[in-house]
Amino acid sequence: MTVASKICELTSPTKSFLGHALITVAVVLILTQTYLARQDAARGPRAQPSPITFELPWETDRGSYRVGDLVTLTFTRETCESENSEIMSGAPLMVFTIDAFQRVGTDEVFDGDQLVRSITEYGAATKIAYRRIPDNLPPGRYSLVGWATAQTFRRTLPTHYYSNEFDILP
Image 1 (tube, rainbow, N blue to C red):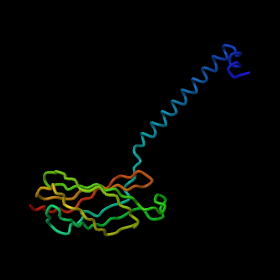
Image 2 (cartoon, helix red, strand yellow):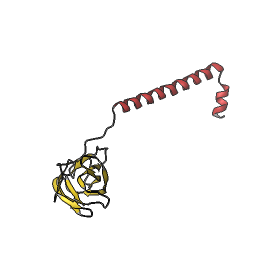
Image 3 (cartoon, rainbow, N blue to C red):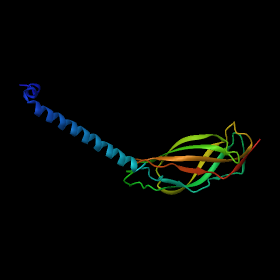
């Protein structure tokens, strides 16, 4: 005897009761899911502060450059993670950076670099970065600006960085 044939043998009031019970269970499940979704949305984004910070501004090696020159930037970077932290588990910290050359006073932005770095040193460290002056940069006063995002096992907010101002000569 199949389940379908047993249901057919049930009396009309029993079938009606089972139908109402199934609908009630479905409504309770939908309401519970809606409540939990609203609670999760009310908490907002769970992004943590960035595990890296920079001492600002990044210092340039000279006050003026020409198109095609290599700019040497010196800065202090600090990582808030440690090699044995629960988040990192001994893995290197991957940092994605996007930067641009911003013209002072006009806020015009010219493409810089998009880089990925693997950081294995934890704590504070003085670092050197190199950026080539793009060919399409007109003469003027500029600053290198950018954002760095660290890849960890949790969502983290990006951190902003910028250099001191420098001139691009004709």
